[in-house]
Image 1: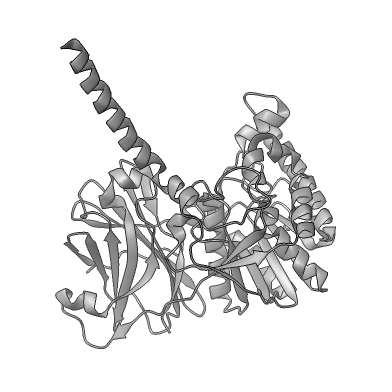
Image 2: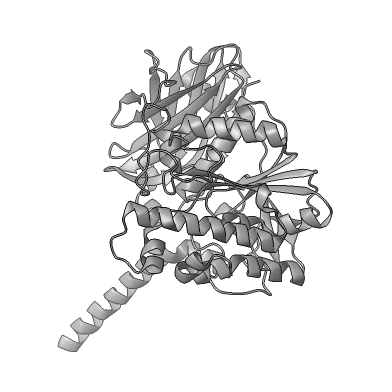
Length: 468
């Protein structure tokens, strides 16, 4: 009898362990077992001047070493812009400096080392020193500059101990750590260099510095009405690239969670010589090889991935729609992957699947769809930037427990419209913002995220929507 009970307990334990394993590793198993996705192998036609933007030293090599080589080989110019000096990675500082509690000076020393590594890596790819620019913004703080530390009156304190860039090689000496200054620097570089092509992080990259860099670029391009070909590259998403090992004879595929959504994936084939040069460039990052070697090596493949996106328009109707008829007129702006983390598997009410909406007169309707029914325990955050010819305004709202609240993060934040309302039906939340879109509003930049007990469960990409 005892043996029977033990066997049943063991069987239950094995089943429970298997279920947890599948929940935890489902997205990773999908990447390993179901590679491919919708990837087109076709020539990538680029113009005369490419601007490749990297959140940290090494991202430009991971995502664009092949693209850089191909452009330079046919006489085109490439300028590399690095947002941060990668000076906030505690593990790298500890491993390279052989210390357990790094000080501000240790982080700054790491930033100086990583700059030299980037210059060496770019030299190996053929990029001139004068074509590599460092902005010197805080590693690990780009999302804060985008969200809360926007104004010059509210500077961000970085791990390097500074609220302004402490590096004498920064594009702007003592650049203040705030979002509006990032915009100023990017605008200046854009107009000085006049790139025909801009290569920057993918909006679905999960690293905060990467998605924030993407948001800043979209913001500046929209604000300046600047026309260029836009290309994105992915570095951080689950276990991408799968697997994290050196596989120089294998192809690079997008993560399974991102296939079938709205990214147009293109494959850029690399010759063996280009692949070897990429490997040599990555080896220049000695400080990172020491702590991230399998991950870095996984990008040395027979190709590189490039993404493009179509910009949706905001559908408009003349008559104020009946609430029940909203679904008939609305369009989807953002498709978000579902079930791709353990948190989203367990909290399906917080797993965002799509964002959409429509316009009626000056009234904006935004639709947020989730995998499970909208619940009281989850906070649903909606963030929008409104572009006008002369200004950009923002609104940040939270829906939780049958209440809408607004929060002002910056001097350009708008008050929550007085007559804002909402409707919840199953797994769909509608938010109605009256008299918010003016006649000179040209574009919206939209994102949403969900939180439970102050912990983020899901976050969508920032995506641009044309109003007119």
